[in-house]
Amino acid sequence: MNFLIQKKMASFFVKNATSDFLLIRPSGNPINAKGFEKMISGDVIQEKAEITKIHRLEFLSENIVMCIFTLG
Image (cartoon, rainbow, N blue to C red):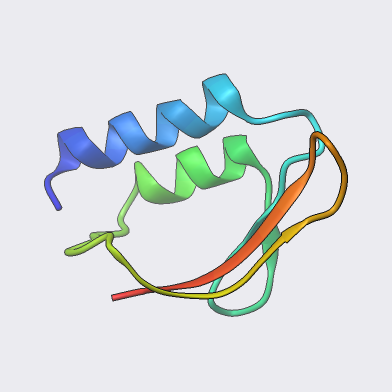
């Protein structure tokens, strides 16, 4: 994935995430939207960002959805 797309994805999370948003990294460690922006805009090179499988999709309330998926 080129750097411009990575920056767009990172800025999308910063602009649209709620204050309590957490992204769970493959390591299992959570990161907030600003941390994700720094991580993906830095030395990380992501070659592909495609959801290949949704393991769980759960509506926790009217405004909260949890999705566990695999990127391929």
